[in-house]
Length: 199
Image (cartoon, rainbow, N blue to C red; front, side, top):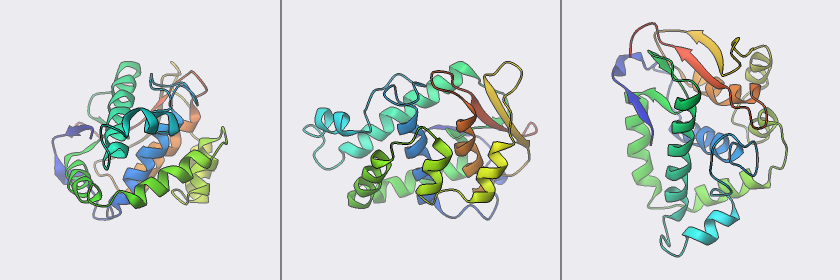
């Protein structure tokens, strides 16, 4: 699903809601498409356009095929814009989290209905405010939104530094997703958490 960092010991015990982490990726991936924020070069792949184009070849699993494609493009584009060493991004989480996501992904393939319903909810959100969308979908708290509003882009405007830490918890993953809101339409800024040389 994404790049992996090597050391699984950096995962905090509070990382338990793998569904939520996947949903954060879905929302940011959809928001960044060319018909929305114009951050990566996919257009409506996670919307109805993508469903019509891909569903015939992947009758049951097309949603996950589309998601994998957009996640990969988003991760590649973020790496092009800003690829800090020894750091975590939404697309480059500790290996233990990525492993949990991969295991859960296999289970979700067996029953894609909840994810189809969730993506429908995502596509019903027409706001240009990523933070508001994440709040509407109950994926972040008001406190997280307030914290993100205080974040600033780096001097080169290509990144959003969040913190430096030797462990990642669920709240930090939410910050990594929500902090994409510090970018602008057509101007991607990559949120990251410095890992202190642990990768």
